[in-house]
Image (cartoon, rainbow, N blue to C red; front, side, top):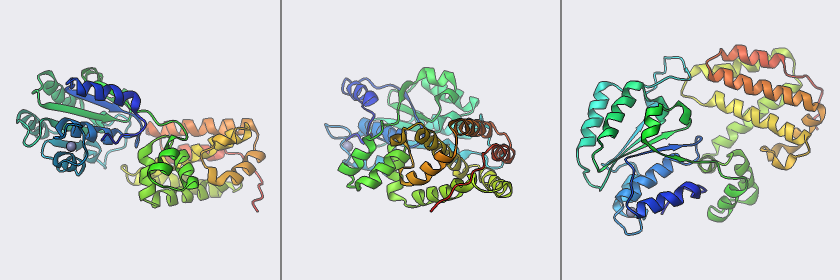
Amino acid sequence: MWQVIGQDRILTPLKRSFEEGYISHAYLLTGPTHVGKKTLALNIAQALNCSAPEAPCGHCHSCLTIAAGKHADVIFLDLTTRLDLSASPKQNARVEIGIDDMKELHHKANLPPYEGKYKIFIVDNAEFLSTEAANSILKILEEPPRYVVWILLANEEERVLPTIVSRCQRLELKPMPPGQIQRVLTTDYRVDTGEAALLDRLSHGCFGWALSALSDKALLEHRSTRISQLSPLLTVDLNQRFAFAQEVALLFSHNHRSTAGTETITTWLDWWRDLLLTKSNCKNYITNIDYEESIEKQAAALSLAEIKDFLTNLLSVEKEIHKNVNPRLALEWLMLNLPRKEIAYD
Ligand SMILES: [Zn+2]
């Protein structure tokens, strides 16, 4: 059973090609975080090694061990686990896979499958491959043993080396349209309508995020905490704003693997997008449907031009931080450009 939801556009031709026996030696799966790339990669691995006639069946020994990450012929490599945490989080940081790692990969690729029909290498966050490591993989791709399949996963295709992209069959996963995740959550997961509607909006079409939020309540709690810090900024003085800027800047510098800083900026962007939609009489499309009243009050206190300006500044700060500009400096500049309003909350 294919478990990827809402990706029929790429799944239908992929299934057909498997039925016809056409299997590529390398696939590149692209799309935002939580859109389903890893699920699809594991599904492909299951489809290629499943022992049932309707592959992937999801319950044969092979399908189960692949899902559990214990299949001897499915090798999973996540490049972010190799990031050097002492280095600055530069946009184009590329992980150095050592020569010993490459020798081992070559060796593994040249050994026939141990228990399955195919040997599958899944490389997560492939945009972090160093040129040297990518060239090594390219060498394997030039003369691939017929039983080896590479599946590379990347959030941003433009950061993957072009020589790699050109050797792969590209499969682009896209976020699901609004409402679809809500329907799946209410029908297949028995989530109540209100919660499903909220998760649909907050997931931005990425089903994996909605499932994570269902199983880990801390995700929604952290979001509420972020909103409780962001929402009052319009009414507080510069001291409090700078204190907040410093706090968020620390989220970026403490641990480069942590996503807390990025999540704060995302929540902030969602909030101001909601203000823009509400001000433009399109509040049916807002993300934070559980904060509709606060959003309406703030939108009423701001002019359309003020909202647009701040949103533009916030987007440029997000981009600058991604380019490794000092987060504290960028956020303090943002605070100086945030309008100050008197808003009465009941
Ligand atoms: Zn199976």
